[in-house]
Amino acid sequence: MIKPYFKSNSHDFNLICGDTFDILPQFDFNFDMIFADPPYFLSNGGISVQSGKIVCVDKGDWDKGMPADDINEFNLKWISLCRDKLKNNGTIWISGTYHNIFSVANALTTLGFKILNVITWAKTNPPPNISCRYFTYSTEFIIWARKSEKVAHYYNYELMKHINDDKQMTDVWRLPAIAPWEKRCGKHPTQKPLSVLSRIIMASTKPGAWILDPFAGSSTTGIAANLLDRRYLGIEREEEFAAIGKARREEIDKLKTFAEFRRKIADIVKAEDTQTDCFACDEIPPIEPLPFLE
Image (cartoon, rainbow, N blue to C red; front, side, top):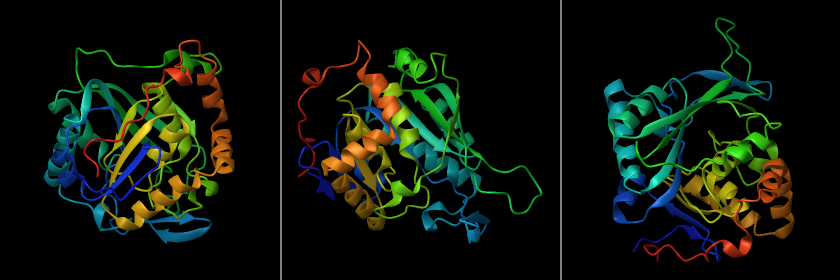
């Protein structure tokens, strides 16, 4: 049995503080979807602008650059461990920049995944390029892949079309970076916005699905999952960030805050609620505790 750092009373949010390389081999459970925001390996003394001030972009020792062979080995190892925790019809989403995304794509194909899309997240509010020597960095990439070449995956095409003015949604998503209201419990240096995670979760899972995040950070994946009637297991090595995730989950235990956050992602929530093929609340199976947690 694994001792969790935190789990909600309703069993829909579970957080383990530990190294994902150590934790994943300790249990046998298959998830419907995995979202991973692994190290980008770009903390090498660079600078950027935040709130009008020049700041160092280093995130921490966990994000420092490594030789290419070491990066490839790192990605191959954790993706292989995650593959064993994914249902045969499950999908994985992995975020990155040019620093790591090509290595991730190579690892996925090596391990037998079928890459479905490479999403370009075009940030509507990127930081400026203070050197003025090249184009401003304003995008990140998110690879979407299914576990098996031959086993069909779930994609909510109608929902994605509906929230895109009844036009097919493309692989370029114009969404803002993190908003101040998402950092009320503390700040993670690579925190993803709920708008991005909500779209990912709605596109590729049904209500009641179990979602794994092996690099949980401040648990944005878990907050989005619970706001959208999904279940979550996150693994985070740094206790400082696990504590933020715990506080964020406790924050939405307050009905007022839960309703406020639902309103922030209202368009996608309302769209799913109006779908005729969406699970009704009484059809979602009851939440059972994860069997490998104390």
